[in-house]
Image (tube, rainbow, N blue to C red; front, top):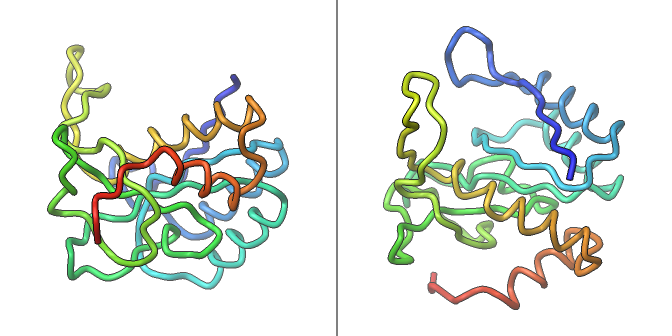
Length: 171
């Protein structure tokens, strides 16, 4: 598999992404025919991003995004809440939903995202990370493998494929 990475954060060490940079990244991914894209970002609705998500999905791209970490009363987070996107929430190792995760009918599936080990620039040993942004890549890689195996072809079939293998955790 080929992995593409687009830098969308401000570059000053913060985790702030501008909608224009997100749109440019999605356009670049589409131009390079990247079939499945992970969006481990979450924020308020944005008309420019909504249009880009719609265009990307229209070009056949499967978009997977973090549901957000606003908590149960935090409201929908975007791009996950756009209908063309597969929204992923986080669970702990016992299958319990992460208490800081945003919730709502837009959430499609849950994946491990609490105390997940990953690389850390400040430590050669790595670190444990928590949040829906760490759950979304689990789903992204599964969908990329399913697409390569011919088990999914678009977002709708990806949702159906995920549902067949999921355990219902309730509302």
